[in-house]
Image (tube, rainbow, N blue to C red):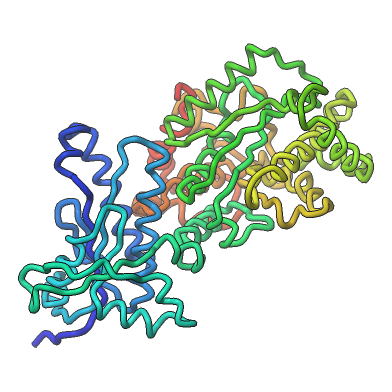
Length: 487
């Protein structure tokens, strides 16, 4: 005989799904719905719940603890709401939470608690989370410090058809306030964990920092194309924009031996914007660093003072280390023959980034690569930097076990699937591992990992070459939409 138990239940529903289907069209709506259903199931599992089923466009999940149910409701609303600023075809959802008696039967769940949860969800407004009294009272006892009263309030007495009594008081749960206080229960904790799994290094960045969104500063040296390295960094940006981060791109177009033509910079900017659109990334602004160092710029004096302060403390050896990065002897010999001005791009960029961060509200983040670790570590010598800036760094692409691969004006990029396959199979560096992290694992946030079985075996950052039986064709099929230079 199946026993009855008390569970915490969660129901979700998309606002106006029928109207959305008609306005967007079936061919556009269905992929969005599949994405929504997949993310909800993955998130329920990640929050410690059991995903019962989807009913059309609705989710039904159960949890053993009130904290897990609150965590799921908060993170799912954060995830769905974040998209409203990124694209026009986003959803609004209602979520209902209930505590009640249920009876599990053949992979499904029945009982009074199920009926009450569905009725409570039905009275929620779009973007709102509602719950019954039992759920609220259990949350009051479970949450520390008595802070539950700050998160719950009454929406009044509602008619809950089919329940006894039908007239019951329903409560709302302020998930936004909860996320702003309980950072480890917010979506930021899931993003932080996924960044770590994908070997993105976080320097001077906490869960609280990720949850308190501000400006993401991305210093980019202009190239002729959007390289594979840029494309990998776009995947980090996608995750951070789920948390509300605003992207500000800084084109590091001064301090180098190359003289950048304005038309070339405009073309590169347009290519960045075009690729951003393919990945649903919103660019707040793109500005040229050369303009910040024009004497006519209103912040020129302060910026120049920062630059003088940085370079007055920086030794020639430090400048060499920043510019030589982890390159092999052949490349560093070429770097040694460059014009002196080339070596100053790094301190010029550091000063510009710090100046931008000082004018922003809240702690900013810098997006960089691990090859720039030495460069950005010098930030911590600046007063106030720990409170102002943190750094996220994608892994370093290596050509062998010691030396990093060089980023050129038109690479790294692969112009065909065949060229990419050849590069992977003949590689003596970490190309396979690097691609797997940035274009296999990183984009899989809240996605099925069934097609990533090969990727999950590449756990060591120093993994080199290509295993004999690795499913290269399968991985290339997943990665090529990200890497195709035609995009």
